[in-house]
Length: 140
Image 1 (cartoon, helix red, strand yellow):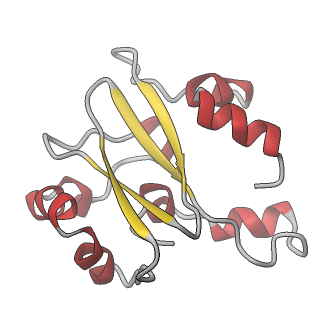
Image 2 (image 1 turned 45 degrees about the vertical axis):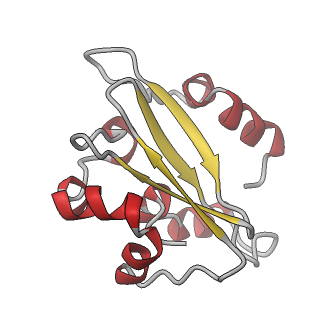
Protein backbone atom coordinates (compact mmCIF):
# COMPACT_ATOMS: atom_id res chain seq x y z
CA UNK A 1 0.00 0.00 0.00
CA UNK A 2 2.83 2.41 0.79
CA UNK A 3 5.07 1.66 -2.20
CA UNK A 4 3.34 2.42 -5.53
CA UNK A 5 6.35 1.18 -7.53
CA UNK A 6 6.24 -2.22 -5.78
CA UNK A 7 2.46 -2.43 -6.20
CA UNK A 8 2.93 -1.80 -9.92
CA UNK A 9 5.55 -4.59 -10.13
CA UNK A 10 3.26 -6.88 -8.12
CA UNK A 11 0.36 -6.33 -10.53
CA UNK A 12 2.61 -6.64 -13.61
CA UNK A 13 4.47 -9.79 -12.47
CA UNK A 14 3.58 -11.04 -9.01
CA UNK A 15 6.05 -13.94 -9.06
CA UNK A 16 9.02 -11.63 -9.73
CA UNK A 17 7.85 -8.99 -7.25
CA UNK A 18 7.49 -11.55 -4.47
CA UNK A 19 10.95 -12.99 -5.21
CA UNK A 20 12.29 -9.49 -4.39
CA UNK A 21 11.00 -10.13 -0.85
CA UNK A 22 12.41 -13.64 -0.71
CA UNK A 23 8.98 -15.22 -1.19
CA UNK A 24 8.12 -17.93 -3.69
CA UNK A 25 4.61 -17.96 -5.09
CA UNK A 26 5.06 -20.90 -7.40
CA UNK A 27 3.99 -24.46 -6.65
CA UNK A 28 7.09 -26.43 -5.54
CA UNK A 29 6.17 -29.26 -7.94
CA UNK A 30 5.38 -27.21 -11.05
CA UNK A 31 5.73 -23.62 -12.19
CA UNK A 32 2.67 -21.62 -11.23
CA UNK A 33 1.89 -18.06 -12.27
CA UNK A 34 0.53 -15.79 -9.54
CA UNK A 35 -1.65 -12.86 -10.59
CA UNK A 36 -2.34 -10.02 -8.15
CA UNK A 37 -5.61 -8.14 -8.67
CA UNK A 38 -6.48 -4.89 -6.88
CA UNK A 39 -9.70 -4.12 -5.09
CA UNK A 40 -10.89 -0.56 -5.66
CA UNK A 41 -14.00 1.41 -4.74
CA UNK A 42 -15.43 0.38 -8.14
CA UNK A 43 -14.38 -3.31 -8.27
CA UNK A 44 -14.26 -6.02 -5.61
CA UNK A 45 -12.30 -9.16 -6.54
CA UNK A 46 -12.80 -12.65 -5.20
CA UNK A 47 -10.89 -15.85 -5.89
CA UNK A 48 -12.02 -19.44 -6.21
CA UNK A 49 -11.08 -22.64 -7.99
CA UNK A 50 -14.13 -24.24 -9.54
CA UNK A 51 -12.30 -27.40 -10.60
CA UNK A 52 -10.63 -28.41 -7.34
CA UNK A 53 -9.07 -26.05 -4.80
CA UNK A 54 -5.99 -24.46 -6.42
CA UNK A 55 -4.65 -21.95 -3.93
CA UNK A 56 -1.34 -20.11 -3.27
CA UNK A 57 -0.44 -22.27 -0.28
CA UNK A 58 3.17 -21.06 -0.24
CA UNK A 59 1.96 -17.52 0.48
CA UNK A 60 -1.26 -17.97 2.42
CA UNK A 61 -0.72 -21.27 4.19
CA UNK A 62 -3.17 -24.17 4.05
CA UNK A 63 -6.42 -23.36 2.28
CA UNK A 64 -9.48 -23.03 4.49
CA UNK A 65 -12.00 -25.88 4.39
CA UNK A 66 -14.74 -23.62 2.99
CA UNK A 67 -12.49 -22.73 0.01
CA UNK A 68 -12.32 -26.41 -0.92
CA UNK A 69 -16.05 -27.01 -0.43
CA UNK A 70 -18.19 -27.79 -3.45
CA UNK A 71 -20.73 -25.22 -2.25
CA UNK A 72 -18.25 -22.31 -2.26
CA UNK A 73 -16.63 -23.36 -5.54
CA UNK A 74 -19.91 -23.62 -7.40
CA UNK A 75 -21.84 -20.74 -5.86
CA UNK A 76 -19.22 -18.00 -5.86
CA UNK A 77 -19.17 -17.83 -9.66
CA UNK A 78 -22.99 -17.78 -9.93
CA UNK A 79 -23.93 -15.59 -6.99
CA UNK A 80 -20.81 -13.87 -5.63
CA UNK A 81 -22.70 -11.15 -3.74
CA UNK A 82 -24.75 -13.76 -1.87
CA UNK A 83 -21.63 -15.72 -0.95
CA UNK A 84 -19.85 -12.54 0.15
CA UNK A 85 -22.85 -11.62 2.30
CA UNK A 86 -22.57 -14.99 4.07
CA UNK A 87 -19.03 -13.97 5.03
CA UNK A 88 -20.40 -10.68 6.37
CA UNK A 89 -19.11 -8.70 3.39
CA UNK A 90 -21.57 -6.26 1.87
CA UNK A 91 -20.54 -4.86 -1.51
CA UNK A 92 -22.09 -1.48 -2.37
CA UNK A 93 -24.45 -1.46 -5.39
CA UNK A 94 -22.13 0.75 -7.47
CA UNK A 95 -19.24 -1.68 -7.01
CA UNK A 96 -18.92 -4.60 -9.43
CA UNK A 97 -17.73 -8.03 -8.32
CA UNK A 98 -15.10 -9.84 -10.39
CA UNK A 99 -14.55 -13.57 -9.76
CA UNK A 100 -11.18 -15.08 -10.64
CA UNK A 101 -11.02 -18.85 -11.16
CA UNK A 102 -7.62 -20.29 -10.24
CA UNK A 103 -6.14 -23.20 -12.15
CA UNK A 104 -3.22 -25.57 -11.66
CA UNK A 105 -1.09 -23.16 -13.73
CA UNK A 106 -2.39 -19.79 -12.51
CA UNK A 107 -3.35 -18.65 -9.02
CA UNK A 108 -4.79 -15.30 -7.93
CA UNK A 109 -4.37 -13.08 -4.90
CA UNK A 110 -6.40 -9.98 -4.06
CA UNK A 111 -4.70 -6.76 -3.02
CA UNK A 112 -7.24 -5.27 -0.60
CA UNK A 113 -8.32 -1.65 -0.71
CA UNK A 114 -6.07 0.30 1.68
CA UNK A 115 -7.60 1.36 4.98
CA UNK A 116 -8.62 4.99 5.30
CA UNK A 117 -6.10 5.70 8.07
CA UNK A 118 -3.09 4.37 6.13
CA UNK A 119 -1.00 7.50 6.66
CA UNK A 120 -1.50 7.34 10.45
CA UNK A 121 -0.79 3.61 10.80
CA UNK A 122 2.60 2.00 11.32
CA UNK A 123 3.69 -0.86 9.07
CA UNK A 124 3.12 -3.25 11.97
CA UNK A 125 -0.43 -1.95 12.47
CA UNK A 126 -1.14 -2.33 8.75
CA UNK A 127 0.15 -5.91 8.79
CA UNK A 128 -2.32 -6.68 11.58
CA UNK A 129 -5.23 -5.53 9.38
CA UNK A 130 -4.51 -7.88 6.46
CA UNK A 131 -6.07 -11.33 6.67
CA UNK A 132 -6.02 -14.43 4.49
CA UNK A 133 -9.71 -13.89 3.80
CA UNK A 134 -8.97 -10.41 2.42
CA UNK A 135 -6.32 -11.86 0.10
CA UNK A 136 -8.90 -14.37 -1.17
CA UNK A 137 -11.50 -11.61 -1.43
CA UNK A 138 -14.25 -12.83 0.91
CA UNK A 139 -13.51 -9.92 3.26
CA UNK A 140 -13.04 -6.30 2.30
